Amino acid sequence: MNPPAIELTEAEWAIIKAVWDREPCSAPAIQEALFAETRWTYSTARTMMDRMVAKGLLRAAKQGKMTSYRSAVTREQAQRGELLYTLKHAFNGALTPMMQCLIEAGPINLGELDALEALIKSRKKAAKK
Image (cartoon, rainbow, N blue to C red; front, top):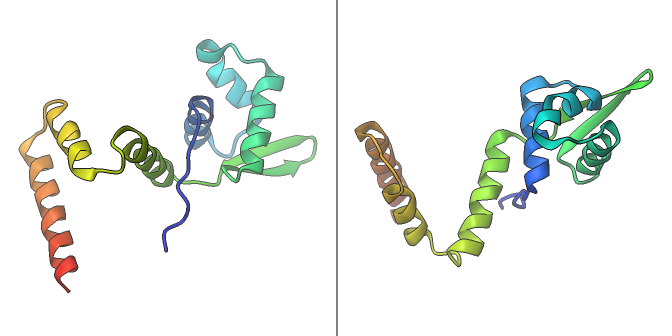
């Protein structure tokens, strides 16, 4: 059984990317890293990070007066959740039109096409068993 899809808001994406790049890290470090982009105050960043802890997206550990944050989800889990959300909402769950859109969206090199073809062949082989 697959774990539930992880859905992140735009603000949560900004935070989790900053955490992935700096973990373990503090709320002040994340607020400072994102300030030019978001203009968030420390209290805003801290509140959002604490909410992400409650949602199971981050882990927090108290170290004296400072709270240290780490990601509770991997990049792959977050990317999968985002992709499944897009598949569900933008393509009504239809994989073929989404794949067609992705493949036709921009340049794709021969190596990527070969990798996609190998993946499809592997899935076909597994489906026949």
